[in-house]
Length: 94
Length: 159
Image (cartoon, rainbow over all chains, first blue to last red; front, side, top):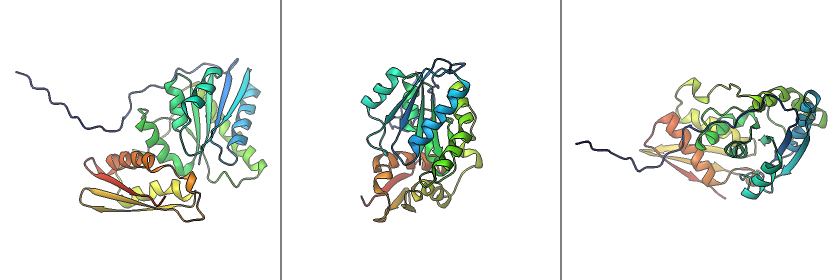
């Protein structure tokens, strides 16, 4: 007889989730910028997006500033940016 | 960091930009969401006090890393690469992200209980420090990883 023991305690996830598929180019991409509202975060994001536009044919750039810099983006904030974006840049963890 | 991995879960490639003191916290936050060794880009701290020209220099320097993150996975060394830490070393690692906001962290261990005490002076940016619930998850993950499982983390938060 086989006995299966199950550990009911909950621990942190160690991995297992995969990165979203990456494009081979940013040509035609809409870059979603998520700014957590900390000083200079928006400026860095916009400059990076501008720089990417120099080497890729970026279709558009969308900026979202979170209402609370120290809390995760709300479901509404995630959805609003995800719907129009191809890739995301988040800043700044500071 | 949490926002970037949440977009990954939604199927969107994301690149997170953090300052150096937040590397350990960033790795831990991503791992808690199931993304072990999640790659991100880091810049020198502090950012908030930089001039406009300095901000542009930082952004210009980090752009290739962000591009690489969006187009394909990049390698960042795991924070565990140095091996196991002592409690003192772990506190120093975790405190780095708090000190940038004017707060600090101490810790003590009594048996199986590790107590972290947040010091948030009145002049510190209390709202910039993550809520206790989030800190607890990160601290517990780092204690498990560095000091071994079976220890219980308690946080004394003056807020």
